[in-house]
Length: 542
Image (cartoon, rainbow, N blue to C red; front, side):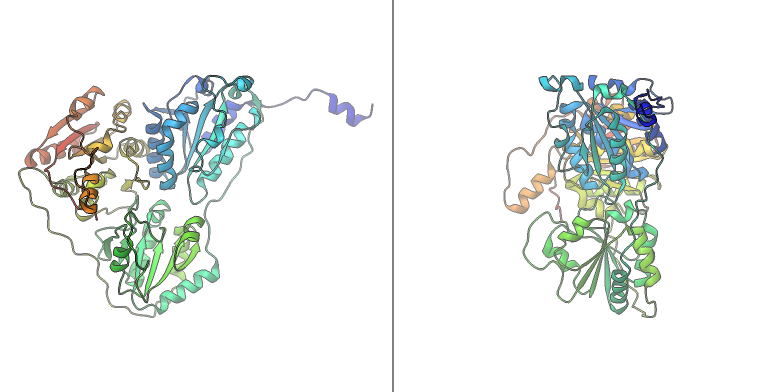
C-alpha cells in the first residue's frame, strides 16, 4: 500500500468540540452573550454547560422575545440572538419578525427542530419545511444539512443580518445537533459599511451646489447608522430645512433645531404640498415615500429634483422618481460634506414654529399627556412609542433631541412597544425608558412586564387609554365610516394586570393626578405602569 493510501485509512485525531461549544464561542466573539427566548424540549441541549458570562432573558410569549431582541439590537446597533421553540413558537413570533424586518433590525433567530432520525415519521413538534416558515421577512433562512454545519450557518446568518440594510435571519436546528462534533469556526472579520460610487456622489454634490433652495428628508437609517452629527452638519452647510420621513421608526434630526421643519404625513398629495417651493429634495436613509392613505397626484412638486442616499437596494429600485446613490449613511454624508461647494450663500432657513402648550383641562387629552411627558421626562430618557391614535400629538408636543432616544415599529403592527422597551432598557442598564402605548396596543404583549420585573428595569409604561382602538375611530371618521364594530375594548383593569406581574401601577383620570403620577414614575428605578384615562375627543391622525 502506498503512503498516501495508508495515511487516508489512518484514524484522524480531531480537535473538534461540540456544535454547542462552537456556537457559544462564536456568540461570545460577536458580543452576543445576551440570549432572548422562550425554550421548549427541542432547545434544551443548547443550554447544557451554559456559560457563566451569558445572560438568558426569558419572555413569556415568542413574539415578545423577538420584540425584546429588536429593541435591544436597535439600542446597541449590533445583532441580537433569539432562541425560539420549534414550529409553533416561530408561528407565534412571526408578527414581531415582520416588524424587525420593517425596522431593519439585525437579529439572528434560531428555532428548535425535532431529532433528525425522526424526520421520516413526521413527529410531534416537527416543522416539515422549517426554513420556508419565516420567509419572506428574513434575509436568510436555512436548516443545515448536517449537524456539523450549524455553527457555520449561524455565522453566515450573523454576517448577513449585519449587512446593510440590516434585518433578521433564521436558522432551524434539530435538537440532537447541539451534541454533535464539529470543528471550531475560524476567526473572521467582515466589514459592513458601503461607500458611494464616486461619480454619483460628485453629481449629487454638483446638484446641491447649484440648488437655490434645497430641503432634506431624513429617515430611520440616519439614526441607525449613527449619522446624526453629519446630517446636522449637512443641513447647516446647505441652510436646508429638514423634514422627518413619513412613518419613520426612528428620529434622525434634533427636533428642537432651528432647521427642523416637522414630520411629513404618509399621504402623497400632502407630502408634495409640504415640499413645494424647493428646487432639490435630498432624501437621507428613507423611502420615497412611505404612504398610508392613497391620494392621486405627483410624488414631488413641479420643478423639484430628487436625490436619495440609501443603504437599501430595494428602496433605491422602487423609488418612483429621482436619482439614488447607495451607501452607508454615515459614510455617504461624510464624503458628501467633503465634496460640497461652499461658495454659494443661501438665505438663513427656518424650521417649524413650536405650538403653544395644549390646555390643561380637568380630564387629560392625548395632546396634554404628550406635552406633559416631554416636559417632565429625564433629559436622557429613551422613548418607545406605540400609540398610533396620538402620534400626531407626539410629533407636535414631544420633541426628540438626541440620537438613539426614540423607537417605534415601522411595520404598523401592534404589540411591539412594551417588550421592545424591555430590550432597550437591557441594552442601556440604568437609563430611564418610557413606553408610550395605547390601551389596545398594550394588550398584545403586556406580559412583558414580568420580564421587566425579573430584570429590575427602570421602565415607565404610560397607557394612553381611550377605551379601545382609537386610531380606527379616527380613520372611520376620516373615511366616513363611523360606528364600525370592533373598536371598543372596555372594562380592562390595567392596574390589576400590572400588579399581577408584581409591577407597581396606578390609574388616573384627572390632569392633576396624571402629572403627579408621571413625576413619581419618572423618578422610579423600578418598573411601573400608569393607566391614564383620556377624554373622549377623537384625534386627527394626519
